[in-house]
Length: 583
Image (tube, rainbow, N blue to C red):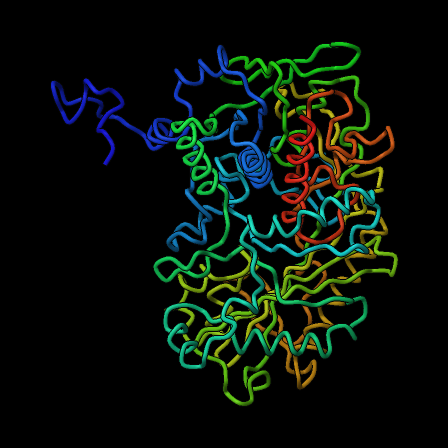
């Protein structure tokens, strides 16, 4: 047990009762984050090697790799929001599902009126930021496919090589495991026992993979299928063997490790400040180049000294920050890409998929299916294919949600309870928004005086976007009807209407029903390249300054369709290596 108060003179209710109004945030500040006094010292006295803005995937990957190389490196992590969730919301009790969306998401930009009103196409908005410690890592789907070289079309060769070199380490950090490895090697008796407490990735997973392997690539546009790589492995402590990854626990464990090393004289503390919004980067010309000299924050000015500034705060917020701080820099946000989505829910009779009755009471499968609208890999898409067989969906709701491979693309209770005798398929289908479309952009908004939000986002789909969208929907229906229904398309039924109030029908859902009006995985606003017009160079350095570096999806020269987190982490690790080895 720790002490009852911060002061050794005011503990245990003596000589007075002591503080009676602690908050969760103040507890975290006292134990893990910088207190007001410590933040004052950080601003006025401390010298840092690296100041990292953000606490998500890339911030953890960068800090962990730097400290692995040199435990004495002084690092400050700056988080704009407070502490919210201790880990991924799916690892928490069922009611935490309601934290997804709503106030857990903010939108630090203004949408173009034509986009918001649907005049530019089906897409009306872009998913926002998660403004809390850990960021999006607490509310993501954890799919981590490795892009192949064809899927990295348009990327510099050196960046592809850097990603390849670090993908193993990125998978280790994120604890990636393939869905078909989760229960690999277990006997049928073990599977029966496990199936009493959680979904099994077993016979259903094997059956779906087998059908995709035999028939999937014969579907037009499909060229690759595999068991889904999920950031979900754990140390199997207390029977937990499936745990979605998030950064809060790992960052705090890293800070605790550094505190022990510091106490032993073998390392430096990892400092973390929360509820601190970086508003602007102060910069000056020094020795012929622009240098970031200080950060203007909501909690006062932080001098940077000799520190290198690492922007690990997503894709769009750093674009706004750099545009306001380095107004002479061109091309920021002129390129924009993201992933548009189709959502298709279908079912196939269990008897057709499991004629020998091998499925247990509660089984899941997760598979990744990649395709292209043309053979040039300029228009990529993929299907995140989740499958569920559940004999008692009402009873198993909490357990199923914890193990469901996708946090958004999940079967509703209405869909499951109306599907006795059926395997339910949920397809989240993601396509690449054309990065080369001059009508889609993220530019300055002179109508907004707030420097943290004064950007305008416009998304206007063009003919290539519609071509990709059409091809990916067609391929998804092909996968369901030609590959996953052994008895043919006539055995496939689709859900129509609201997830909680719709009905099953044999006809395919209309284009309007299946196309989602929101984008995810925004990218490319700070793309890297060898050419001087690229905002970021191949060493991840922002070209407008000699000590500002960028991580995350903003670096993508073009979006691809694959989920970006694994590659983001690999490149953040490469940035750490480059900066440490340059010392």
